[in-house]
Image 1 (cartoon, rainbow, N blue to C red):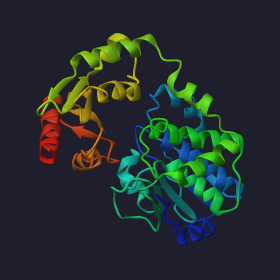
Image 2 (cartoon, rainbow, N blue to C red; image 1 turned 60 degrees about the horizontal axis):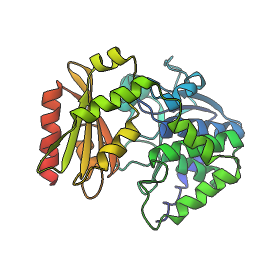
Image 3 (tube, rainbow, N blue to C red; image 1 turned 90 degrees about the vertical axis):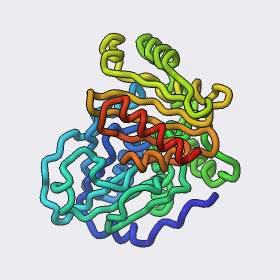
Image 4 (cartoon, one colour; image 1 turned 180 degrees about the horizontal axis):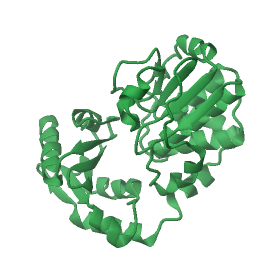
Length: 322
């Protein structure tokens, strides 16, 4: 693979504004948050004013300590002279803030997802990149700057979570490792990031994982595994996170499994659907049909409706692909 060429308009965008508001999507993962922070560090190096805003919630154990680095509310500043930068998604409706308040701003999009709207005065979208943080590393290189050890660690952290610590990479991805080598040379520690992602889990998360493993059932000729959780589970066990990456690994390792869906009830009328694929099932397309987004092998969506109805919709979309 090769990274897409950085559009020349990106230089124009960075040069044309003094003030930048950097946002990501709701339910932010490490790639979203770390790409925001990595871009903010670059813009500050260039003498720009930045505000880094994330709606949250910061429920993932590995990213909770990042919350103090973000504003979580939106105070509606004047759009004059300010560029809104959307990271790791292409649609301002996914920020969690009122769309009508964001639309007056000039918009830049930096994303590695193919799905999304076509808006944005400045667009840098590279669906071949495994993470948005790799695109931010490319921007540091483009402007001839070298991130410090803290920023490099954040960029590697975002990459590691989006690739399952390299597990989702295919052959021919040498350019990815070139950028990773830069991060490590600049101070990122793979050992420290691995421990950050995998250590320090509460016992309740393991009990919740066991509960979801017990509920997992095969569908569609034993090719699709689906499990679920609800608010009562989380309240009873006193946890908000289920260590999803480890749970996906366990379910995807089951013989015959081609794809996995985990359905999390947020309320009686809203579910969060997480999707993973082992081989040829394009879960990114399924998530897009559900109003979400992601990649061919990892995607998700927030879907309105009770769990039984959402499960039926998910199965229908899997059926269409299989």
